[in-house]
Length: 376
Image (spheres, rainbow, N blue to C red):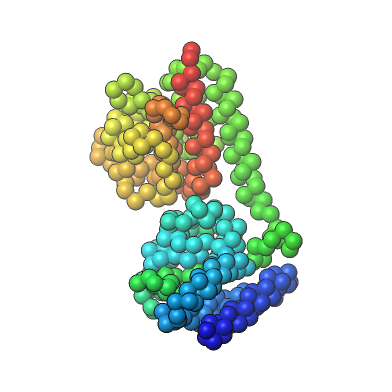
C-alpha cells in the first residue's frame, strides 16, 4: 500500500504541473516554445515513469488494491484527454487509438471519427509516407522522432509532429504517442483564454460550399423533376468548373448503369468523348458505389490507375485526365435504391477534395436522388 500511496503522490504532483501548464497558455507567443517543451517533458514522464510504475503495481500489488489501480488508470486517461497540447495515440501502422480534446480542436477531426482510421489520412499526401516510416521506426524501438507535416485541410500550415514510444499495459505491441505542435500559432485553448486568430481561408471555403449547396438546390427546384437524365444534367452543370474539373454522371436503369453526362475541361474534348462512350460497368469505382450505396472518402492521387477503367487505346482514364483527387458518390435516398452515380475529378495543381467537401457532396447527392425520383 505504501507504493500505491507514493504513486498517488507522484500523480498528484503531475496533475498540479499540468494545471500550471494550462495557466501558461496565455504567455506571449515568443515564450510559447518553452511551454511546449515543458508539456512534452511531462508527457515523456508519463510514458517513461508513471506508466511503467503503474504496470508494476498492477502486476505485484495485492488484489485489494485492484479498485484503486483502476481509479488511477481512469485518472491517467482523463489526464491524456486534458493535456493542453494536441496528442494522439496510434499504433505502428498509424491507426488512431485515442485523440485528446486539444488534438480534435487542432485537426478539426472528431475523436469518434478518427479512432480506427490512419492518422496519415488526415495529412497532406506528400507527408504520409514519411510519417508512416517514422512511426514504424519509433514502434520498433529506434528512438523518438520529429518531423514537419501538413494537415490535409490546411496544407499551407506546417505542423511539427513529435513521436515517442509507449507500451500500454497488458498489450504485446508498442504504441506511438504523437504530439502535434502548431508552427507559428498558439496552442488551442478553451473559451476563457484567447485562442488563435480565425482562419479566413477556411471561412471562405465554408462560405463557398454553402453557395454551392444553394446553387444546387435552386437548380433542382427550378427544373422538371422526375426525369433522371435531365436532373443529372442540371446537377452536373452546377458542379462543373466551380467544384470539379470533370463531372461524370451515370443513371441506374432497370438492368444496368448508363452514362448520361460527361463534362470536362475545354482542352480535354477528345478524352471526354472517350469517357462518354465508356461502359460504366467497366469502371470499378462506379460499380462499387452503385453496389454499396454509400459515399466513400475522397481519394487523393488514387493508387490504382485502373479504378475508373481505360479508354479505347488502353490508357487508364485517371492517368489520361491527370486526376489528382476524386469523389464517387451514389445517388440514393434512405431507404431506397441507388438512382445513379456522380463521379467528380480534380486534376493538375487544383486543391484536393477535403472531408468537408465530401460531406457537402453527400448531402447534395440525396437532394439529387429525391429530384430524380419525384413524380412528374
